[in-house]
Image 1: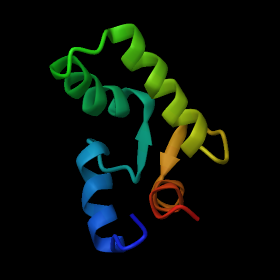
Image 2: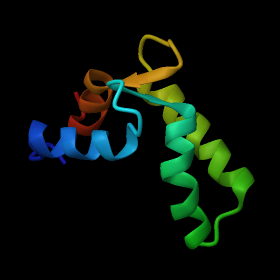
Image 3: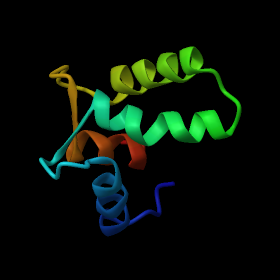
Length: 78
């Protein structure tokens, strides 16, 4: 995944950041993630646990939001 460009990451980030405030909230992550999980037959409880884990891993400054820089660091593995 290290070969992904910043432009590609920004495009994906914007797909999740529905209100374009340059951060992903837990609500936006749910809107993006839960329908995919339901389509795969994963329970809402399991999807919520995964969402909480994503926030915990990506929200480096623990402000309850994922910034583009936090997203980029995670996606590029740095």
